[in-house]
Image 1 (cartoon, rainbow, N blue to C red):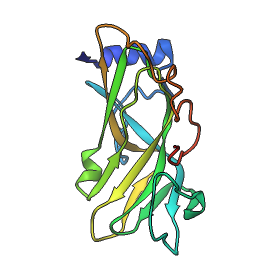
Image 2 (image 1 turned 135 degrees about the horizontal axis):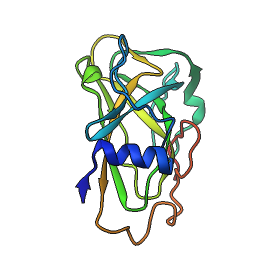
Image 3 (image 1 turned 30 degrees about the vertical axis):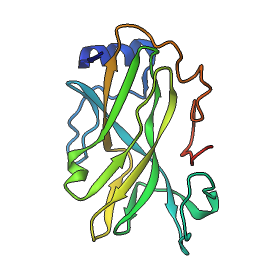
Image 4 (image 1 turned 45 degrees about the horizontal axis):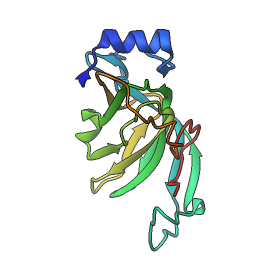
Length: 184
């Protein structure tokens, strides 16, 4: 399994629709960078957010998480209270090839402010908008920006396709269109 280059990512995005919309460049003055990089792709944050609202639930349980615990918000930015999190989604829609697995890591610009991004790997043949968990680990409120870079995706291609892909398993989050809460 090998890390894929910008040339491979561009080819797959443009000719195979792996990333849509696809941003070719990387530097955007006055913005947190997004788009194609040397060995990855910096995805953007959409303007859709799910915030925990008051009163806070006594317990967050992934088996019984109630959507009423969250407030939906559309905005060009979101302010995260100290030591809290928000759910967001990628601006880009992804179609991962059957022989590819991705890993996603947060951007250093946000990490330097105590903001961490958690995204599970995109498995072979998964497609959809990525649901993102964005945590503010700092003691201060923190801002994240829609339409700008939020995390970098690294693409790894295996020597051969997997035997059973995410779509064949009937993955719970296949083709998700919105911020998706846990499904059991």
